[in-house]
Image (cartoon, rainbow over all chains, first blue to last red):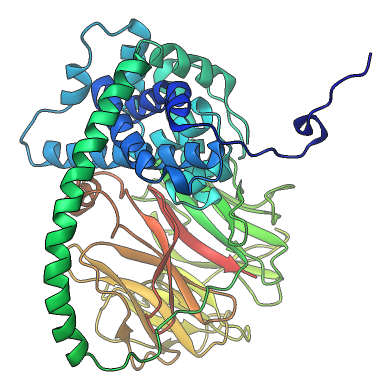
Length: 180
Length: 365
């Protein structure tokens, strides 16, 4: 029986682009979760993902492929998440709110795993969090994460190295030294 | 670079609690997009009317544009920097073309300084180990095959005992800022050792905290003071300790002064007596000192590019307000320090590496 070999199997990248609605159905939840991890707030993550997809809809005709669209929507969502964290840090700095406000606000009905992760992610800077989430959660490589974050791959690797170190420590995982 | 499987599993498990209904979210999105589009059209009409009027006025007044000031790209090569992570520091090599980073010092030790050999094939690092014990380690440029050429037990004096290192231009000698104990008193000074660790180190007279070897190998540039008391100034001296020449005489406390690769200039950094630190350049004889940076926070640890045209340095100018406030308080470790580069005249500033703690210490081609 002859085997049907697609272009992917012979190493040729195939660029496809689905419609916006199907794309939204497959990607929204993971983008919202990634933004939630960076902000350590599930509600905020969902709102930021909404905003990112609204902006994507505006630019949908410019998207050459699903990969292009995915990079775009992650770029918007993660950068919004980093801005949110920075603004929140400023609020804490000026004494307008106590620390850990957003993490506490999202704790209702949260799972133990989420609460543990939120606590551990608190030891990472926003940049480190973004790098860890994009590489270890959203399955991007350093170059992809660098494009999303507007950093050099070297910068991503440095943040990733530190972020992983801190996150493993926060989760009680054994240290894993590596050269990235 | 692949994902860390353990972290991936934990992140997925944690994020799994956030459940969304895509259909509901999609309805919400289309509603929001529709409202936004309507508002945008109204705003566009108003803005177009205003721009039409302003455009005529502005176009009338504008001169023809001159040539754009586009700074040339920084040269390539490798910068080694101290990656500051809390109280631990690791020497990391950054390939400027491609962005690859490699840890160059032992991650069980805390690094204090580093210098590429003149031919770029080796790197000397200063590390502190528990005890404390201070070492000067020479390794291949990728950090492999480390050889300890200096090992000193801590003297018990305040601060680390070895804080700077420099190669002679022929690669045969290494000078380092260490301490000698005389009559029970520890004195910080420059010691010179064979690069292979043989022989006994020779110590200079005076109190010196940083060292840079002139490109012709004839003199050392040192910061500190020749007697037992400050003020803290820049001097040059022959490696045998003779021929001391004062370069500055105002106690400006210029730290980590480095000779340019062409030998005609010196770069350093100094404080304003309060909080700010800035980068300074002067002629090799100490004249014509000018400040290159004027950020109100930290600009520190300048290093020359191999061609002497650029200077890389660390700054907290783009750190978060919390990090800047922490730095300003003077309590704890400096944080939020990214790496930047500028031309040797202070123009063309650009970010090289975004980081929470990257102190450049040596740059090779």
